[in-house]
Image 1: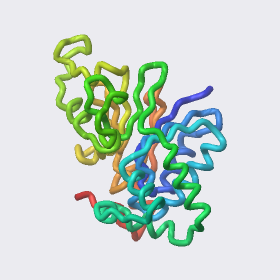
Image 2: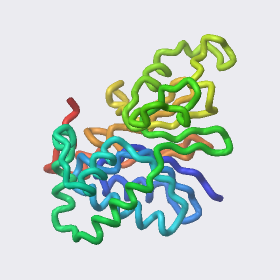
Image 3: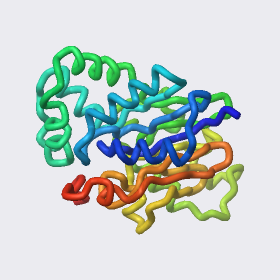
Image 4: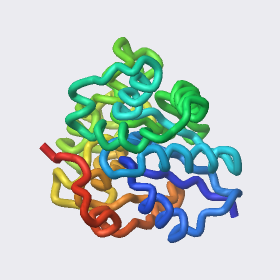
Length: 244
């Protein structure tokens, strides 16, 4: 049976990606939706992108671009090193590309350039790395950087009284636009959880793989999910990203 499986922020954790693919028993018939932030954190950022490129040649993969992927894209294109990027995991990503030839770097650059900023499906589900601010939906967003940086959508969903129904005037218009919204970007570790979180009709799949948490893959039709081991256990001797 074909499944649609959604994967949270990976942050250079190739070993975690391989674990969740195995634990979810992923097959070429499955559709994979990646929510972005493939790089910056653990030591295998290059390997993560190489693996996803390989998977995209074998099955349907929808790859959303995260803010860390934007930084990598800019560096691969121009060698420009954003200072904030280096502080938040860029150093390990640069090191993972140190021995990579020019042709392969260009392949990765073109793959990053083709990534989607968001995706919707026939069930009115939205897949986006961070969020959007327009009351009319992401297609009318004025600042496209919000797709990879915005946290207000998730914070709004968290603050909602769960008793408020979707047809209520009090239910936020942004959330009414879609049946379900799937995001990453804001680690659930901020809320002392290492499993997917749901608030209103928003699912957060960033379960802290960049730090001390786990990588998550979830079947969006059943909400069953599988997780990797905690990333520090998979990368002994490494520290991942700075959580501050």
